[in-house]
Every structure is written in structure tokens, then in C-alpha cells.
Image (cartoon, rainbow, N blue to C red; front, side, top):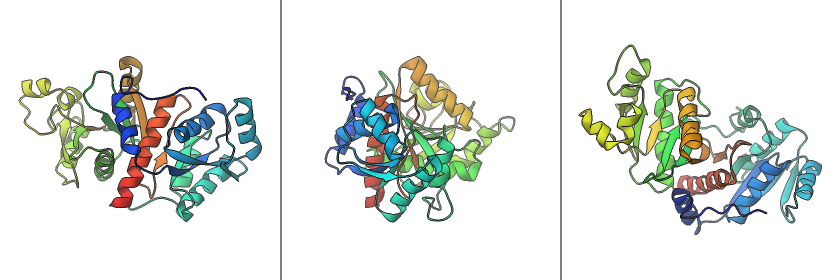
Length: 309
């Protein structure tokens, strides 16, 4: 295995997550279709960091071949045979539903197939809460981690769903050690404007009382993350210039924001689906080893938090 360690110098915010995970038990995690190098390596890297105990779900021969071809050690790991992506996804959800595993991790499987199994009606992982995705960004020279939601799952959420998305992010932020997270409900302007529907919706979301955190909006990006920009605009709010969470209006806005930070600012990102009965790790083939490790660390902390709630 290559050295994919996260250090305090390279990724200080992710390093802090790993430190928080050290006293916690590894999370027994069903890894769906780990049958090629990137998917299997991500699970094994997280295992080697003491974050998860992988249960490999999929075609046994393909998993064995991926391990053999890349000299990966999977000796002693439980393998659950499943024929095809859909069968593997449902087998993994069965593992979580029955309590055999505590979390789910995406391997070499299409995201829609993976998530369809998660939210299936019978014996799935859905709850009364809206399921949503959170990216956690470790941005060079930025003083704290920044969460972006939802840039991967909910396409154009309405006000009711944005409220759920915001609460999910606050709950996850608290699990990651932020006592009173500030959530900025985003738009292109800092005042409600009927010509910009997201600004009106942002104010409606901000008027909701959230458990464990503070939300306000609408905010344009500068006023959410820069105290100076907020002061120049005369914005008075505990969230202004000090956001821990950016609640984006649509998936397009979120996608452009998080990818801009990654490719233009050198940020790294971890991601987790929250609001389900268990942590759901959703990674991409383009994700780095650091991103996969950080995502698993988020899952460990989130699982511990919801178990204590």
C-alpha cells in the first residue's frame, strides 16, 4: 500500500478529524463493489488508518483479482458474494439494516444504483429526515474547515427540504467537533429579492429555529466568509463572515463552488450522505486517497454522534 497519510502540515483540518477518531472503535463498513484498484485501495487505506473494518460486498472473483493485481492484502476480510451492482448495493444495505455493519461505502458502482438501494422503501435506510450530502473542505491557509451542502444529491430543493438539509449539516458539524455551527443560506445577494427566488427562500429557511446551530441568510459568498465584506455591507449577524456551513441554492451552484475550491484553490474534500439511519460514504473515482480517508473519518464521528444522541 502507498503512503497516503494525512499530516498536520498537509491537511490540518482533516488531521484534526483523525485525531478525534483515535479513541473510537473502527466502523464496520459494507464496501460495495470494491473490485478495482481505486475502490479497494480506498477501503484498505481507511482500514490501515484504524477508521473502518471493511466488509467487501460484490463479485468475489473480481475482488480477489483486484487485490492480487495490485498486491493488496485482504486476508481475513469478510467477503459477501453478490452478482452485479444492484445486487451488491442491496446486499450492503441489508448488512446495515440487520446490524451486521454500521455504515456503507461506495466502491466501483454507479451512484444512482448505490443511492437507490439506500433509500428503498422496504428495509432501507431512509428516515423522516431528508437525505442530503455534505462536502467538508480543507482549504489551504483557511482557518477552519468549510462545509458545503448539498452539491451532490438534492438537485433543486424547496424550502422544506432546504430546512432539512441545513439541519443535517448542523448535526454533522457538531459530530465533527463544532459546538455551535454557523450556517449561511446562500444566494447571489444579501437581501430578499423577488427576482432572485433563492434569496427569498434563503430568508424563509433562516427564519427556522435549528437544533444545535445558527442559520441566517440570504448571503452572497463574500458576506458569508469574509468579515470585512460583511462589515462593508453593514450586515449584522453572528453568521456573517464566519460561516461554518454554506447551504447552496442548487446542486449546480454547489458543484461549481466545491470543484472551484478543489481545482483552483488546492482544497481537498471529504463527503458524507447524512439523514439516513447510518453513515453513507459517497466517493468518486476522481477522489484522492486523502478524500476517501477524510470521508471515512467523517462517517466514524457521525456514527458515534448519532449513537450518543
